[in-house]
Length: 400
Image (cartoon, rainbow, N blue to C red; front, side, top):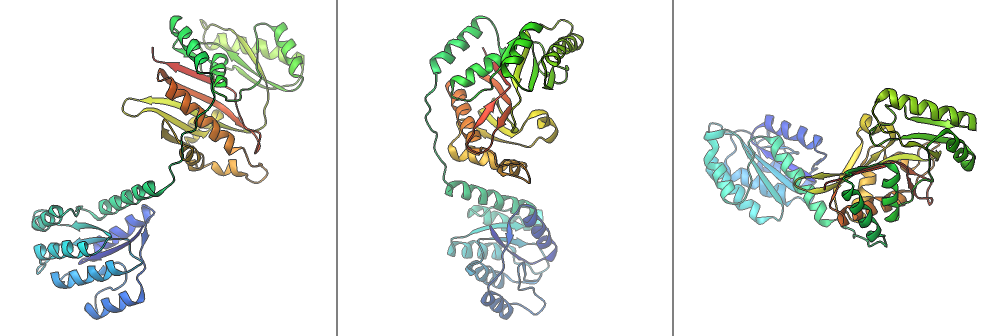
């Protein structure tokens, strides 16, 4: 990641420095002996710090010695060799020197020979000797960033794809039933059943089809509840007024039932209303786990902050399924709001291992059943450390 620049023009070097900063790379700091040698080699007007500006009249032999010196520095991982065509620039000879010197060192060298047709012969020499050339410094830096990321990918621990004990046959039977019924989209109740068969904790939920059942189920929970519309025709329950929070008495539950049904009918007159779910209110951090299917890559797994803030914040990470343990850990840490999960101010640390387990189990579910087109668990409530993560709302779409 420590990049040095050798150039015969100051302007392109400044552009390269700006790009290095933007891409999160590091401008190498030379050792004292490197700067001392460069000072002896170059005219007084030249810059011997990084970037090394060897001046416009630098000849090929000197350019080669500068490049050799810079590549010999232990603080340098890679070099951008910039050359612009000036009055006495030895284009071909300089390109040949870049090739010769780069072969001496086990370090990355990329060219930025600028000037189009005027410098084309030098570019050909570089490219014919497996040294990539870029017409602008920014693109040269971007390529080095890509190389850095690829190296880190090769070096990192890839993790493993764990095996889980799951109820695959039962899920297969359910999906077969949905297919026979021509149902490509399923909602919370059956969605939770499927993920629970793959070992994911789900919220304790009751379906009330009338006010009497609503009051009865409220009394079973015996504390504040959330009430949610159940309708195959209304996907976004909040927008339809189909969610009521902090219901604290049987009378409030009965009233909330009536309001939810009324709002749903006003939102969509012909919607089928199955009933209202009654669930305990869980205290935790809401996250989302989602799956979509890409024509090229197949299933993509998504993770991010959940609840109503998904579309607002768009703070998510993605991986191609199947994922490994390392992938799951990285997905959790990549989102900008991950600090909330680690403990922030008065918010206690959350169960990241519980999230990791859910991500890996959803990955297995979609690997086992490629007919799953899309799905999301939103919200997945992440409890305090050691208490797991609990799926609340689950939606699944199939491609039959």
